[in-house]
Image (cartoon, rainbow, N blue to C red; front, side, top):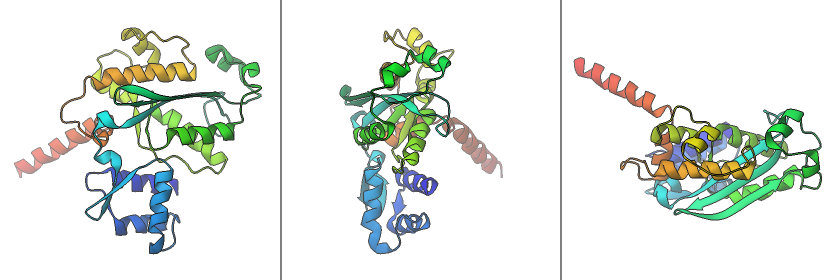
Length: 270
C-alpha cells in the first residue's frame, strides 16, 4: 500500500499533477478506498499524513507544486537510535526544528524510553540507559512527532535514513506512515556548496557552524538547518517552487538531464 501511496503523491507533485479518475483508481489499487464516493476520504487520508493538496482545473496537485520554496515550512529532523535498522533497533532521541520564512517557528525534542543501548552507541551519543529510564514510550513520542511534523517538508542530513527509520517505526504501532515530501541536505549541499566531503561534522567545520553536542538529535538538526540555510543562498533563479527545490537537489537529476541531452542530440542526427 505505502509504495502506491508514494507513487500517487509523486504524481501529485509532478508538473501535470494527477487527474481525479487516476487518483481514485490508484487509491482503489492500494485498498485505500473501495468506490468513487470515497474520494474525499482518500484526500483527507493523504492530507492527514503529511501532504497538503490543491485541486486545479480538475487535476490534483501537492500544494508544494505551487508554493514558493522560500515561503514553505520545513521540518529539519535528526534521530539517534540504538542500532542501524528499525526491524531490530529503535529511536532513542528525536530532535526537530520547524523553519519558515527565514525563521525558526517551532521546536521538538524528546528522549525515548529504552532499556538497551549498545556500548558503542553510548560512546558516540553520550546517551545512557539512565537518561532514558523515565522518558516517554516510543509510541507516544512518535504520535507527538507526527502532530508536530504535520504537512511540513521533511528535511534531514541523509534524509533516507531518518525518514525511513521513523516511517518503519510508525508501522510497528499501526500508525499510518508519513507521506511528506522530503529533502536531503547532503544532496542539496552537493549542488550548492563546494566541499571535499559532505558529512555533517566536516561541513560544520568547513562552514564554521559552531554548534556543540555532535551526535545528539537536536544539535545535529540545528547543524543541518545551518547547512540548509547556507545552501538556500546559492539556489539558481530557475528554482521557484518547493518541488523545484526538491527536484534540483535530486542527485539523479543531472544524470537524467544528460540522458535527455544525448537523446535530443541523437534525434538531431537522424
